[in-house]
Image 1: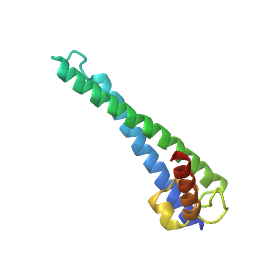
Image 2: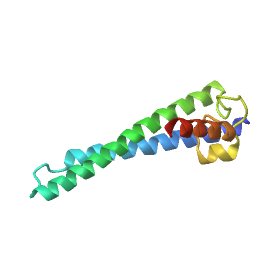
Image 3: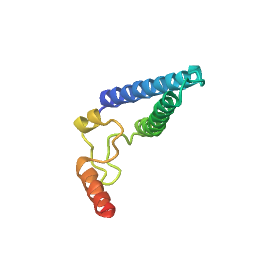
Image 4: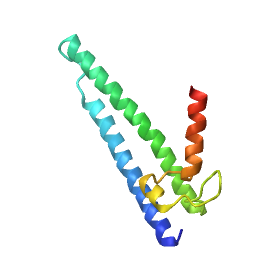
Length: 120
């Protein structure tokens, strides 16, 4: 991977992280602004369900932001774009589709197969 590609993916990761942080802030603001005194119990239950969904989404964002931070660190350390299992290049198409990928396609398939075998 050449320096142009590394900078491209660094910016892509930084922008993605910024979008997720902004969405998380909006979620927090929405929850703060929401009026807790809702008319009937059905409406209250609906709002609680919506809030629960928003909080779960925010938790997923938090985990994703952590993975993005690790990917940026790999860029900084010159390890980005290489499979953690095999050391082979991951491939630009895979990284374009999933910039936080840490495994090449073959290693990812083996990992998923092992997970499926353990889960069944």
